[in-house]
Image (cartoon, helix red, strand yellow):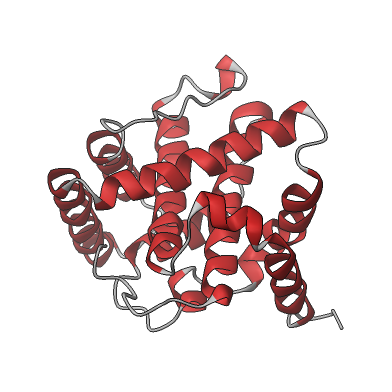
Amino acid sequence: MSQFLPAAQRLPDRCLALAGMLRAALEVQEAARRGRSDNHLLLLSVQSILAIDAQDSIAALAGLEGLQRALQALCPLLHRGPAQAEEAELLRYTLSLAKLSGRLLAQPKALDRVQRGIEQARRQVDHFGELLHPSVLAGLADTYAEGIGTLSPRIIVSGESRFLTRDEDTARIRTLLLGGIRAGVLWRQAGGRIWSTLLERGKLCECSRDYLRQLPGRS
């Protein structure tokens, strides 16, 4: 993961990576608070985690269409800040993913654990022939717990206990968070920093609108 797109230094990469972290936050919130899980977006998260050979940021995040909702939410959050409790929660998750990604890159042992977990997941996908096989998700969840869960700040997921107690629920949420870490690593490697994000939020908003205009059905 540390060797992923080392030359990425452009604002568009940072914009996409921010959207990738926000996508993870949105999906975690939906799963934890409402018990909703979009298998397609979960699939994209797994694809992104395993895309260690991707040649650009869009490929690394498993395509532009899967980022649509996050790109739509990005500009309002950057400009006006959270307007309600759930938006504040989204911002907390996203900021935590950004911070954890930096901590991961600075911790060789944790980074090695994550890289080994990704390689194991790729072998499992080859074996089972299915990205969302329960064993693949369980393995990625363990990778998150053992590689990221030891770092600070720990992400405390808020939601309904009935949506957080089953092993499969935990595996999905941790896999989504690992996908957010993947996006966070890209953001860091593209020069992303929390303080500079505030300074360039106008440019990031324009960039997000440019990407949204590229999506089918939009002009």
